[in-house]
Length: 94
Image 1 (cartoon, rainbow, N blue to C red):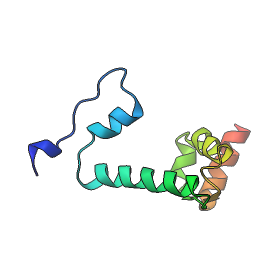
Image 2 (image 1 turned 90 degrees about the vertical axis):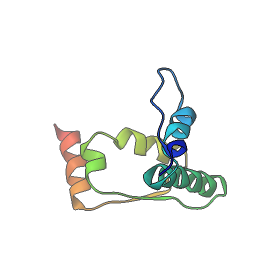
Image 3 (image 1 turned 60 degrees about the horizontal axis):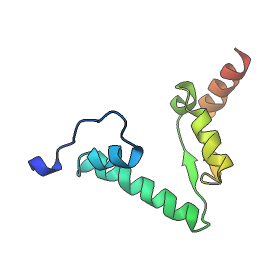
Image 4 (image 1 turned 30 degrees about the horizontal axis):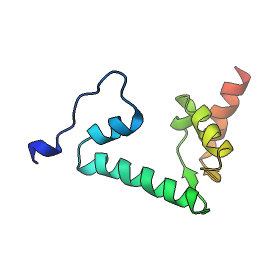
């Protein structure tokens, strides 16, 4: 580990690009940037992007983001387990 690889504190008012640039340049920080770059490249290249996710994505209130990505043709398919459908139904009913 090198000090140059450390994360930088969040600065109020910074955008997503600045936030991502502040993440560590190792492990999950690099992985997140790689995933974002590959999803963007696939979407811009007309390829399919499948969001394979567990039920907590729905349970924790992230469905509006998934829906927005579908509407923008970034995500072309969603794969989840049965609990995903259950949480989605619970939110719709209650």
